Length: 153
Image 1 (cartoon, rainbow, N blue to C red):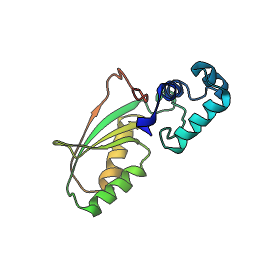
Image 2: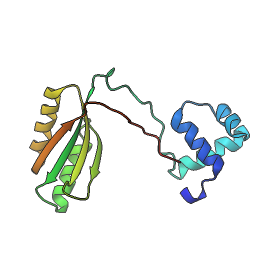
Image 3: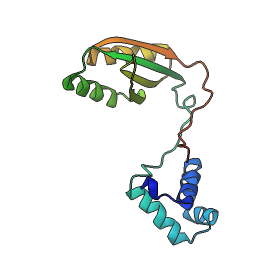
């Protein structure tokens, strides 16, 4: 559907990325469409998977997860069995808030949120107990200069 998105769809998506709690009335006023036409467009984008969900963005400090780590992983194997075990492990670990298979020297990059360094150590021990890794290292975020969920439209 991405090639079928028109200017109104893009404006709706931009508004929803900024504030998913906007009412259909507020959205329809902002894009100069009737309420029903606006609702239909949003529903079509949801059904097409353009809109994957609507969430509340939490303040990590206020919910007890102020420490963010970028965890670099090199795998000890690349077979389907190892990959499945690794995917299962990170999928079940709530500390992992982002996981990416990479090109280059790293195999995976994990974005991890925890309370403090001892909590990271527990995460590290759980992960390495579940899946054999050839190398794992972490860099702790000192300053978060930009963190956005908005996709450029």
